[in-house]
Image 1 (spheres, each protein chain N blue to C red):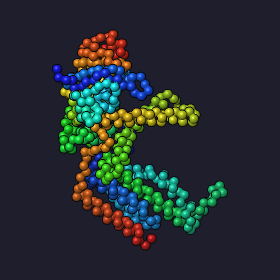
Image 2 (image 1 turned 90 degrees about the horizontal axis):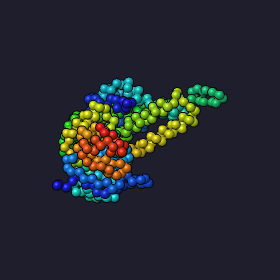
Image 3 (image 1 turned 60 degrees about the vertical axis):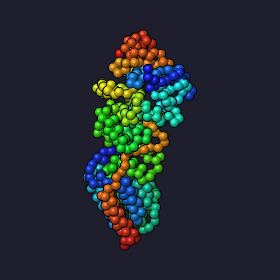
Image 4 (image 1 turned 120 degrees about the vertical axis):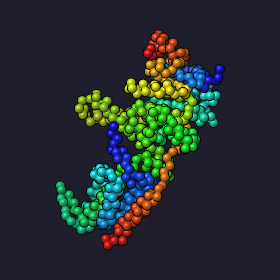
Length: 237
Length: 263
């Protein structure tokens, strides 16, 4: 078997002055897998994500394609892991779409001509071609979520890490987004409360609760287990 | 939501819209400098400045009334300062007014000074309003970066442009939530002040938390302390011509102001 692209071993982390946010979490994800991370609010999903590219560092081991997100490898890991935050107003911090989609590749050292090329491809992939000059506050939430995904596609990340991608979207925008995510070939970790999205998109599911990994298996099996879902504050789709 | 007041007329294809933002920024600053250094009583110079400002408004094909309306916002501030001038500057008394036993004397020198201060303030704001109406804010930002304005300032302005609207909407939601739980203007002044204080505090904490998430988002995409931009401004021949013409016009104003018979 090929080595996993994401390897997390015995990872623990506490925010200063509060109970552990992650406790002994281990997880391995193969390239190309789409894995859902589900669990109640405060389960540690976002905290886990921030460890994958070295924004937070806890005890234990994190490796992305064999590299630990620290020191000299930090830049390479951040290029590999594209983190999409839940609120696109956090993700999109530049005045225009062009500036924002250009931000990742430019700061990872891409030459300008290639950056323009990547922007065109990334915007085409999310169906937002021609939006370069728009300002985020002129766009709908669904459009901003798409641009947020384009900002990491332009980085050519092999791993996409999405925090609540469908939260706040109306049914049509949500369907379009799920359709888009299905077409993307990258390895994906998706945190979500949207069980139908999990069911549609991710063959594998991991349940986090209270910072602990409590289940890891095929989505079809876990999500049908009403007792397990109930126990961790979730519901079957 | 209510963002139109800031970015309503910037989309256009007039000559002024197409000029390099660096030129427009520098030209506006030069205009403000000349306007504020024009001595009182140099009325022909002021008239020429006003003509120049109106000319650029017409050339940019922005509805002139809209720009005039925007340019009036500064008058209350300038007016506060200017209002005291007619009474305090000495010179020939013109008339005297005695409200409640005070004695207020309007003098000719004071009156001239007051008019000059108002004219300078209004002309400067008019030029700035025209600049903002014919140039996208982010283009001005690129111009400032190109002109080597310190990155701390340009980044701060960039985030301000981006998050002013987000914050405004957040404040709007808080206000709606408050209104939904109280009838009419509600309560005593102290009660309302307390509620308002709570709202401001909550807005501050939310913004603080947001800033941490934004910083994490920036780090995630390779930010290492310096902001790079893809935009390269291209200086065209028309920018050189427009710059020359504007310099000549401002020099005419300066010579009119400083070497005319009214000095």
